[in-house]
Structures are given as C-alpha cells and as structure tokens.
Length: 73
Image (cartoon, rainbow, N blue to C red; front, top):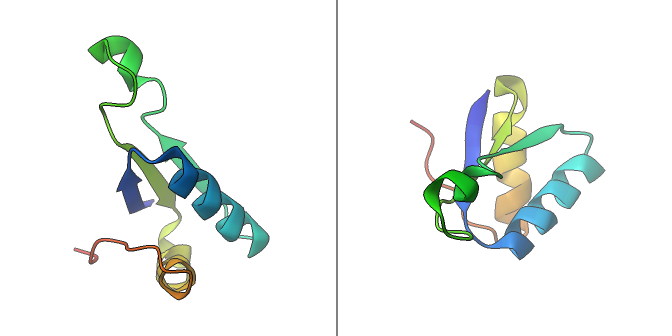
C-alpha cells in the first residue's frame, strides 16, 4: 500500500474516493478515528491509501481532476 493523499478536507476525501472507485481502484481512508484519541475534531489529517500497482494511475486520475498529490518517495 502507498499513500496517495493526506488531507483534513472531507470534501477532497469524498471526491477522491468517488473518482478512484469509479475507475475500479480500491482505496482505504486511514486515521478516520484518530481525533478521538487526540481530543479534537479533524486535527489529524486522514490518509488515502491505494495498492502499489494502482498508485501511478491513481495519481494521474487525481492530477487530471486538479487534486494535488505529494511526489512519491
């Protein structure tokens, strides 16, 4: 699994997951419940993860829809 995106913006998360699922790329949103441990709502960014084999294509899909992703490491 590789990290595709990290954000606090719930609309970006929803749009990204919809785009990826529309292209049959399974994605997972991590850190959804971390604010419970931290004590505030939405302070910890959520990570969207995809399988290694889909990472390049997923980045291209997001770039085509004007969603910035970090450079892969």
